[in-house]
Image (cartoon, rainbow, N blue to C red; front, side):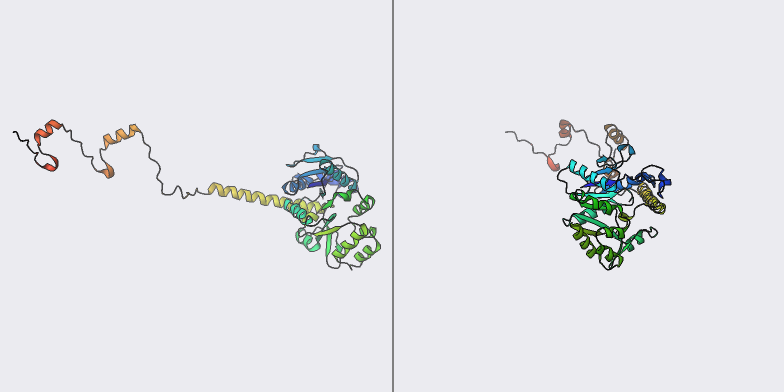
Length: 341
């Protein structure tokens, strides 16, 4: 699956993050020694469900790294236009593309296994839109000081995620409505008003469950959609304000320190660990070094046999002289004399 990453936003002087960037792209703000978007690219590289990346709004000169191919697309000026350009690029690369992953560049604590979980969960059905949400208790357990914007429904209080899966046809139909919905993504009440007073009232009075609201919105828009409820906060923890940037910087610096300590401990364990003899090597003696020179000199100095016993000196036997002195046959018996006739 192609992953579309939107990174075209440049904070203006009125933006709370402007002082950290001063005219540069928000995606490039430093987070724990890396551009913020690099953390997102690392997660997409670690995900098995992502084949290639389509990056909107930056160029190859940004100095980003990726083991997977990055296809760069210029900034189109608006978020929806950027997503549409990304979908068109995916179709240009492969006309058979049906679904794409769309992620923002400001969720640096995202991990590869989270991306894989999302894609697998979405592909259980064949809907057109999958919208991720995070329960408030999940977010506040992980990032208690995040101060997200929450929507309270009858059965859940939630905030939106920043990574979704969508069918490519969503980028070609009813673009004017999608433009307004995306533009008001930080205000659930305004979004609800765009799809009818009934949805607005249900949210305002907290009288609808999540499933009821999804059904209502999908019927109003004429699409098939499904809400994906996350049990992880990272896909919804984006950077909109300085305190959120500070939280994520501290969090990732802590993660890096933990990894370094673990690596150092593992290296120390390897250097101090004694080699363990394998079963095949146990009980085996080191092979003796045999050389002709050493053998000769050894026998000359110690003419002993096995276990230190003296080697019996060989007697020189001359057959003729031996029989003359000992005219016996085998086993000491006298040799039979030949009879003469």
